[in-house]
Amino acid sequence: MAPGYGGHNKVDVFCDKPVYCAGDVVQGYVLMTIFQPFAARSLNVEVIGYESVHWHEIRVEEVIVFDGVDEIIRKIPHNARKDFFQVDVPLYRFDESQLLAPGQYQFPFRMPLPANLPGSFLFEDESYESGMDTYESVVAKVDYKIKAFVLLSGQRQQGQQPPQRPYARCPHMHDSLEVVVLQRLVRPPSELTAESVTQVRSCCCFSAGMVVVRVRAAKDCFVAGETAQMVLEIENHTDLRFDDVWVELDRIVSVRAAGCRYISEEKLHKQRFPGLPAGTSYLGDRAKTLCLTIPRDLEPTTLSHLITCSYRVWVQLSAGPWNSHPRMQLPITVYGRPPAPQAPQAGMYGPAAAAAPFGGGATAAGAAPVLLGGGPQTVAQTVVVNLPCNALPGYNGPQLQQQQQPVFPGAQAACCPQPAAGQDPLYAPGPAATFTSQPGNQDGAGVSFLAPANAACAAPPPAAAAAAAALGQLPTANGSSPPAMEPVISKCAPEAPPPGTSCQQQQPVQSDAGGSTLPPAGGLAAVGLPQPPQPPQVQVQPSLGNEWTAEDGVVNPLFAKPYA
Image (tube, rainbow, N blue to C red):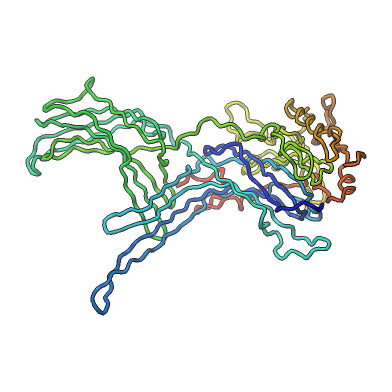
């Protein structure tokens, strides 16, 4: 590489927002920064959903020693993990016979999440005692991560030793991003009704009469931070006076690992309401409205293989110290609180702010990779992975929904057809397509390149055109401004293109430090830098067997059974 520059090659993962709902499409990009040229096989993106539990059980055992009995405290760890969702697809396949040139390369991706995923969950407890048992460092969580990594080439490069572990992950070129997933509503909310009949006793043995308690609510599902409104009716067939009405919200968390179980019951919130005088009832128009505020930071209701979290509401009437208290419970479902409207990250859908390059003038970050030393610029190729069209069994459309998109900052990538109004996007029909075979794929097969039939090359959007024009005004190492680069337009069907565009790929004409005009490949060779990656020869058609294997044999995450 050019002298005077150093650093580690790396990849970074970015998403358009930190919180998603189950069934949403995760959009983002992988930014690959190369300092040292190397050969790679592919850039992969992996989405993982897993649950894990960990805690220590404290046991006190008595042992007999020579002078009596002694106590030994043992700390027994319990751990378990289960991956319930995993999708691993190659985002980009490189030419293993060539070294990747130094610079920055941006690779967008789109991945749909199954609609039946459980929500993100985190429960922590430093210490908990239940009877004779003591637990410490309890952690239970449901987590989602988006990972990006580079697989090394299996070919021997000229002047280098053969790789010891072909197709292994590159040690330094990996990144992980944690995202929050909110569980979707499993069923529509239903009316909550409950009734309890209690025989009140005084002094533990004398009957004081019967009390009937009824509770109604408009729904049985609530969002954290919401106020639950319930209507309370009381039929008092006693002569007792009830001083208070207490409403309490409890949480029950149960975790399992290797046959062991930890159970925690905690009172989260308790509210007091006025009681009723002796011999009176609250019926009809006299029924009381109870408002229970659900805390905002509650974990959602969860039912999984290792973690169970449930909520219940207790309603209790206090009848004094010598009388039994009528008491009833109502199970409710709590969902995670949706986030506030989120703005996309900078650079996701439009030109990013200018940033200093490694060795020369400025460039738009994430728009076009800059070669070290202020040499000629080359436009990054973008590849879009769109799983709904590729992964659906029985899909009648094209099995490979992939195009080389126009390389403009902020260009909108759309591989799969848009569904009609009221149509399920997973079942959107595919367009007619023209397939051409390109030899030279690393797997030994031709590459299926898809161009929509009867589609002309679209002119760049105004924001993208402005960003592309801005690239032509960026100074080079010697202070001069290179000519504006022509956009790289993807090949379309043989239909008349709009004015000013061409359906054939336009090679950008660039200038080197001396001002001479060179094509991209020649310009790179002239300044002693490796050749950039060739236009993508990619076949992204993920194998369903590598995506998700559940215990019940379901391997397709888009059609898996409800998670339980």
